[in-house]
Length: 152
Image (cartoon, rainbow, N blue to C red; front, top):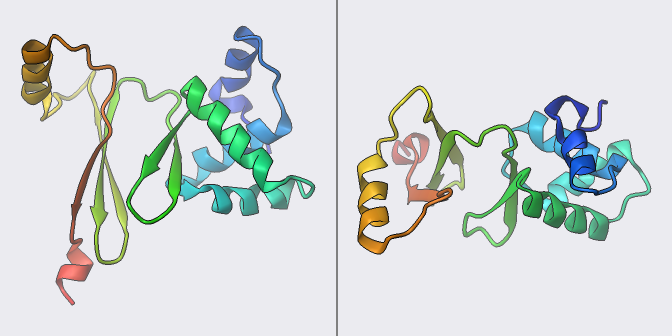
């Protein structure tokens, strides 16, 4: 396992004067390979397979640091636990979630804003103009019922 080397994260840690650790790299690798939406406990069980001596508190502290640095984003899907997603390298991507209220399925919807117009562009522009507010990112979740649950 490369422990986060492939994403350029290690260099960014050093640039900010922070220590690179196997734990940080392992958590980044797990989130990047699994596609996100993992709870801290799920991440802990995956990291424990690689680094058996790790504790849950270390995973929580590491996730907090990774969120502060912008490598990982924390989401609340109203299921009683925070979920985490690797976002480094997706600075030009608008990322929305569709969450099924019945089964809890989370569907990602991403738009590369360099190649495709964001369908919410006009709405965001109206907020910027009306409130003189600079939008840096958006975390938009749509709650409803997925196709599978509607058919039952």
